[in-house]
Image 1: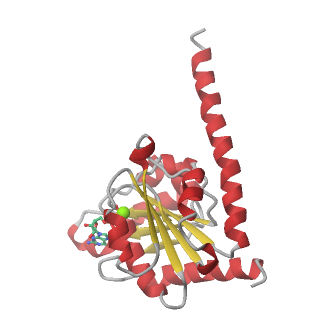
Image 2: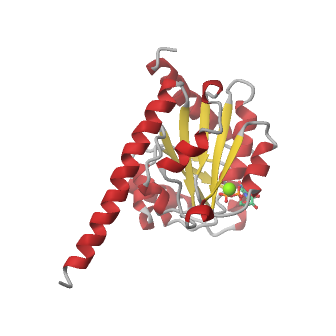
Image 3: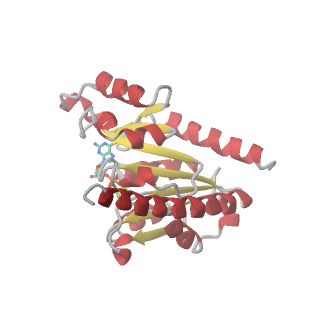
Length: 232
Ligand SMILES: Nc1nc2c(ncn2[C@@H]2O[C@H](COP(=O)(O)OP(=O)(O)O)[C@@H](O)[C@H]2O)c(=O)[nH]1
Ligand SMILES: [Mg+2]
């Protein structure tokens, strides 16, 4: 008997993820039909997701019509910070449904109803700050990006490998702080390469703007590929 309990638990989790997978595919079809390129931005709390998005949105305007869905357990702080850029922003507070540590596909479906998808080229999803749960939940995105800041230590890629393995790019943020830290950047980059060989890594500072041009070019290339695939 004692051996069966964990098995049942695994089955329940498996069912939740299977339902999420179906909803994510529906989202992906819906976004593709309207030519929206969707980028899921994930990190632990405080790595600089909102700060990077503020700078990125400013760099993309007016060439790209963008929008953001932002998830936090509580508050509309990030939506307020992002709305300053002038793009449409939808804030999701997960405390309304149990304080989830991630955004699930059905939550994105509901949040996207508040956006005019036909008028959007690039939709950013700023996920709930967490290096574990968001990695498990496909939301129907085209690209997954992880932000790791230099104040978090070098070894997070190997401690949270699923996040780094399932992402298409990583941003090593807050590099302006490097002169003040005992941070072994080479070791951090080696850990990222160990978990996900060949993944692009952009070294950025949302504070100074350093490194953002290469990241923005990567986004524009992804957007172009999506447009070409849709024959637009
Ligand atoms: N020095 C420095 N601080 C940063 C940088 N990016 C973000 N921050 C600061 O880090 C804190 C958390 O940033 P925030 O964008 O809210 O992170 P989020 O929780 O991942 O959205 C804020 O005080 C930011 O001003 C950066 O590149 N350099
Ligand atoms: Mg934020």
